[in-house]
Amino acid sequence: MVAKGDPLEEKLLEELQLNQGTAKRDVNSPLFLIREKEMEISGRVLAAKQEAERVVAEARRKAAEVLNRTEVEAEKAAEEYQAKLVADAEAEVAAMRGGFDDEVAPIQQGIRQRKAKAVVAVVEMVTRV
Image (cartoon, rainbow, N blue to C red):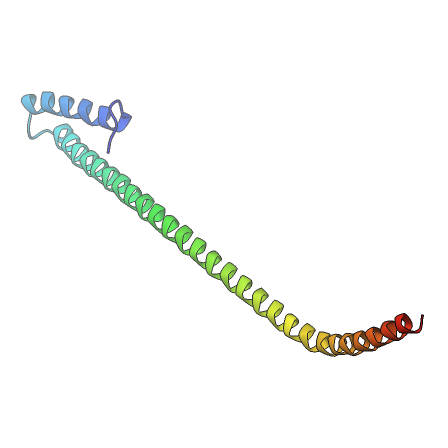
């Protein structure tokens, strides 16, 4: 909207007062007709300016809505991506653990066999003494 003290509004009011003074003198004079046309054009300019300000305000409001919606969607997408990365990492760890179990099983079997032989050897040493 037009702010108080706006030069365009002041000019419009000034022309209106001048036009009213001229109208009292001579309605059919060319000067009166020119001023009347100027007033009409000034009114259209003022209306166009107000409409432009309204359109800009509406565009700013819509832009803010789009920005907010985009930020929310981006945050949601980031959270989903992070959850996917965590799930992938957990699956990879589980796969690694499964591979370790396959490698550890023969080692544990060997330990059990050697432990039995070690027990027999210790018992033989103790009984010889």
